[in-house]
Image 1 (spheres, rainbow, N blue to C red):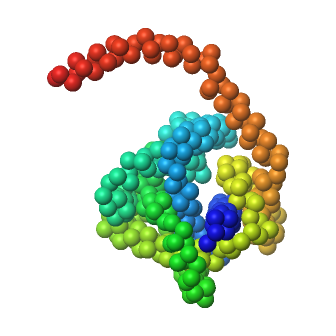
Image 2: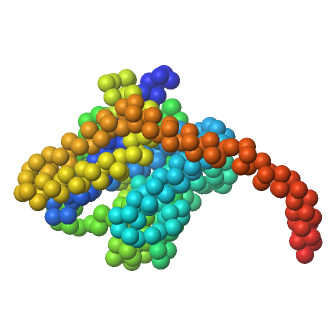
Image 3: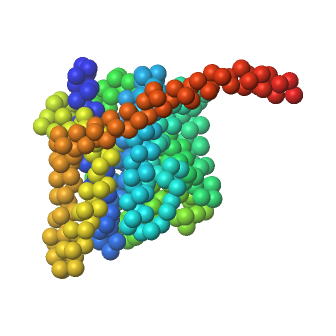
Length: 356
């Protein structure tokens, strides 16, 4: 596989996954009492985030570059958009939440990716890290609150997929491409049928697929939770391989969207809320079919809007202003001077403490 083909593969896959992210969030408003949307929702959550995390790991092979860019590219956007989200939530609900430690809705992925990338240098030094990460991912669900602060639960639960992505190389992707397409289609079809069966008969709590809460939150004992999460790990891996095998490995009409997935990810929740309002009005007017069509079509429109130049200009304008403030010399120079002044005292104090 040539370099350009591999890049096209990743870009095409990112477009598919970000579409499923937006679609999943839009139809979430319709899943209660609607077996079709519940089945579709379960199918999406069987694989789309594990595969997204896998791709993030695959793109993190330049460890030092990723570490250096983690604060500017992940942590700062996380803090800024989290504050914006909770300000809007306070205006809408009157509920005040400390916005840094509790990721707002979709923003958990930014803080988790930040932790994965800044710690990857040290994590990969641990022997048998992938099996150990799987064990940790299974055990984190036994915590009473599941580790919701700073997305701890999801960071640990999805870590195996990130590490598998990091260790995956070009040769592995070529092996996947040689798997029978019919077999991959059969695997995806089986997952679709399973998802719609589970959704129709309400046999699974969809919250369990978020990996954000304890097993008890879904009404499971720790043993049941570990067993079911292990099954999800296996099923997500197989389904992800099937999906990956069917992704085009050449440039197609939507490939360029793969370069703009961050914009879509950060801004789509606000447009999604607008779609919720439209769907709500249509339901009040008894236009059920039209509300369902809106839920299916609107993710494409959202993606289109957020890949246009105005959306990119909005993102650049917002963060250029933030970066000017954060990296302004007049702000940080006094802090730097004070640090230089007290550094000898800190070194002296450290030596004193080490003697004890």
